[in-house]
Length: 262
Image (cartoon, rainbow, N blue to C red; front, side, top):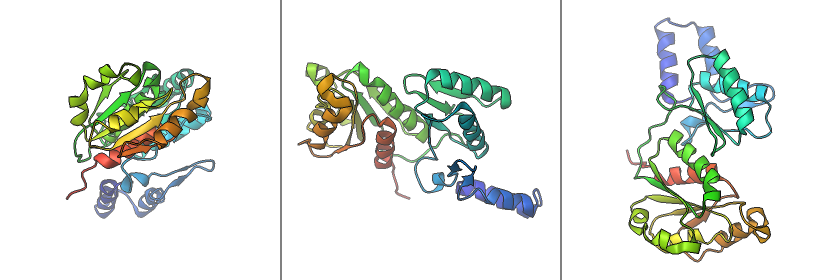
C-alpha cells in the first residue's frame, strides 16, 4: 500500500466517511494479505520500484483468479508472468465475467497477464534518468526480451527495442552504435554462445544487464553456456541475471534508471 492510499484512508476516517472497523480492516492488509495459501505483499510498492509480481507457472486458474482479484482491489498495477496462452485466455474470460470494466490484457510473446495502463493508480510514473534499451541477439530470444519490456512498461520506464543484432552478423549491431550510446541502461538478451553483452559492453559507457537464454544447440546446456560466458565477460559494467529472467533484468535496469534526486 503506498503513502497516497494510506493518507486517503485516514482522511476518510477523519471525515466520517468510513468507521473505525472499516479502517482497521483495510489497515490489516498494509503489511500483507494472508489468503491462507498465499500472502500478498500489498506494501511492496511503498519500498520497491515495483509492486508484488505474480509468478504464474504452476498455479491453477482459480488461484490466479483470486490473486488477481485481490491485487486489483488493492490498486494494482498487476503483472503475472509465465502464463501459457490457454490458461491466460481462461483466466481473462472468467475474470471479465466476475469484474466487468477491468481490462486485463495478455502479451503472448512475453507470456504475461497485465492490467492495461491508463487506469488510475495502475501504472507507476517514476522520475528516471533516461530510457532503457532492450536488445536481443536473435529472434528466438524475443520472448524473454518481451517479458522485460512488459515489466518496464508497467514500471513506467521509457524503453526501445533492437532485435536480431547478434554477433553472427555484427555489422547489424555496429550500425546501431549511436542508438546504443544514447541509452541510460541496456538489457541484452542472448542464447547460443552468449557473446553479445560483452560486445555491447565494449562499445558503450553505460551499465549492461545481460540475460542468458535457454535457446541453442546441445552444448548450450539450456542456457548454462551463455550464462558462463556472460559471467566471464571481459567488458566492464556487465551484470548478469538468471537464465531466461527477463523480469529480473527489467527490475535491475529500472533501479539503475531511477532518478533518486529530490
